[in-house]
Image (cartoon, rainbow over all chains, first blue to last red; front, side, top):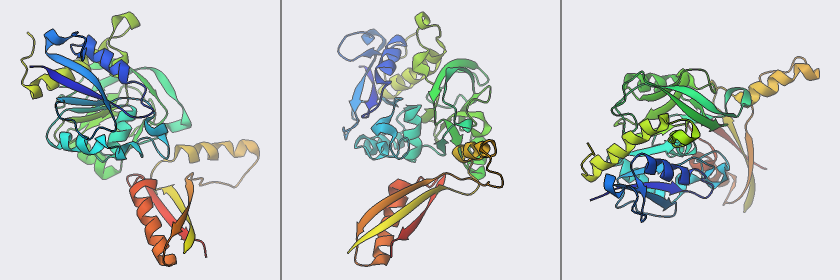
Length: 243
Length: 82
């Protein structure tokens, strides 16, 4: 029995291989190469034209520019065939994580609240920032103590999380702010870097954990988050967690 | 009939507009005093086959609501060319 993570590829996605590689480093190996099989987890790519996510135990929407980001980031991607299956998977409690452009897609699809506006000052930010875990009730942060600070790369122009006052109040009351920037990065309300749905199984975040999973490239804090996702995938698949 | 429809997509009142703020900040340096309240949106032109202008507006509104505007932060104004 193997837990299987799917990484969705839209036309214009560009972080999908990074995510598969990062999942391999945290315990999931690319399908077919045998790597990671011992850990009971595998990860592979899912084309956006797929209408079924049967067989997957967790799904990641990677960063990039899905459908060229035309109109608005995520505006066209939300109508990709795979999105109906993703909505059903999420409603069934399946772990779903949207990274950067994937976060934008999830908000456009209505699977997460709010919207991601152009950064304040129209500044493209591309650097490693300090991010604080705000809750451990999600598939991306389970087992990570709230208050933990992680160094994660951001790389975006439209990461300025925006929502109305009532939505913000609800997100706080329902413990749905997942990550906050420890500094003002892009003008996001309440310094929000990531949010989740009511159940905590759908998470969107602007930072790129997959780019901080290999000591060779100088940072491994992202593996903390992806490790939690891999555990969630194993749990959904009914695969024992390694000791 | 074929109607020319203009869909103006703009940010809802109260939603911060980083583009508008940046344009506004640039104006004094260029010598444009007394110009403010800059809000940046999108203008989208459509050709709509419809029975009459009302029908064309209704169809364009459906397109705007479903795709052209993000209701979380944006609203749209539909104008059918006479």
